[in-house]
Length: 311
Image (cartoon, rainbow, N blue to C red; front, side):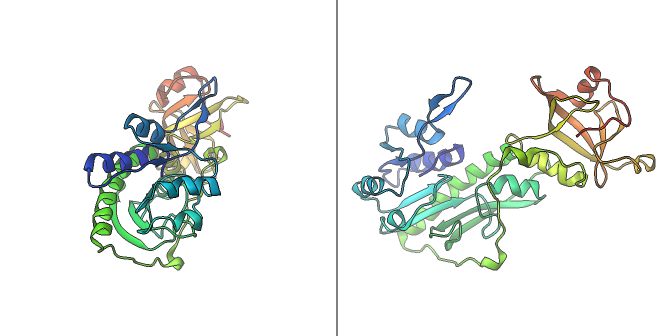
């Protein structure tokens, strides 16, 4: 069970290993995409169909009809990776060996829908992958295996996702070997150590210039490519500006009196903006309806001055 590209890495690993028979893929229904909003399959459905697998796309995976279709497959085990749906007992109790979930964090930290993004946004230096037995409570089941992964200074959510996906595939195969051998451990999570990674919304990308520069910088990394970090251009401009890459810069003493969001130095490398604590250089941006460009190229087309303010 899975939907996006991270789950594809796990499905591909299962298919290529040849150690188990994949009875079917359960994924979300086609969603409208593109300018014409044509129904399009998710990544897992596309891969499953290319691989000749049976595909189930229930609107409600916990409905009696869906449960009976899954029961008819007689699964020994259900593996889940970024499926995007809560499984109830009717599904969890079907396979005799249980349901195993691959989660993109070192649980109990970052339970929830967006662990990769929030780990970056919160400035973590390490994350990882957890395999666990599923329970009714979100990401709270007993841990089987964990493997850590260093977060690199230049990582965005996109680059970290790709490395996490490969790691998740490896940990999944290790987990299934242990389940098959009857040696998989069950390590209860400590709820008191839990932190959470709620689903992102577009509003999460709006810059609050009163935050410290480092926190904004980390959000730029964590929310790239979606929802993206953005602000409103200065001088009464109504256009939004996406911020794709930034650099934390120590402010000169002369800029300390500036308000958060004010440009304190146009600079040849991009505008330097005062934040709640420190300065943030805009290294790569994208104006509304425009192309991605360097901060210096943006300044060539937008004559900004010291004191102009991003909102």
